[in-house]
Image (cartoon, rainbow, N blue to C red; front, side, top):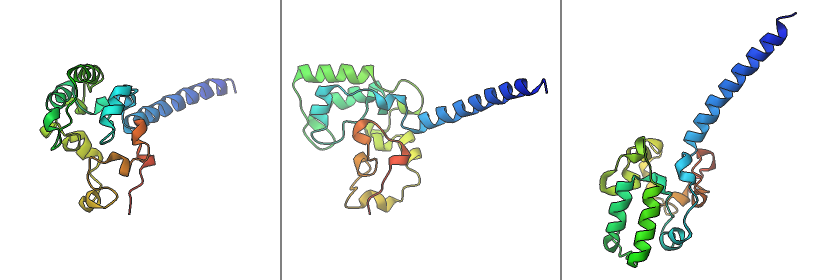
Length: 162
C-alpha cells in the first residue's frame, strides 16, 4: 500500500511525458510555429490582394530575397512596389523566414509548392485535386485549408472542394 502513491506519481509523470510528445507532434503537424508569425499589415495589404499572404516561415530568407527582387516578374505578373515598401517587406520576410530544417532549403524557382516539405505534406493529394475548379492550383491554400488566412494549416481543418 505504501508504494501506491509513488506508482501514481510515476504513472502521472509518464502520462505527462507521453502527452508532451503528442503535443509536440501536433504542434509540428499543425503547420509549425513559424507559420504563426503575425503578419505585417503592409505585407497582408500588398500580397493578399492577389493571393494568400503566405507565412514568412514557408521559405528561407534567400528565397524571399529573390522573390522580392523579382517583383516585376512575379510568377508571370508585375507585382512591382515602391522601393520603400519592398525594403520594409523584404526585411520583415528575412527576419521571419525559415531558419532551419526542411523549410530553409530553397525550393526550385523559390516556389513553396515545389519545396520538399510541401510535397511531403501533400503526398496523399491526388493530382486531379489540384485542377478542380474550386482549387485550380497547389498555390491556392485557402481552397482546402479553411483557416490558411490565419496561418493555421492544421490538417484537421482541411476540406477539399468537390
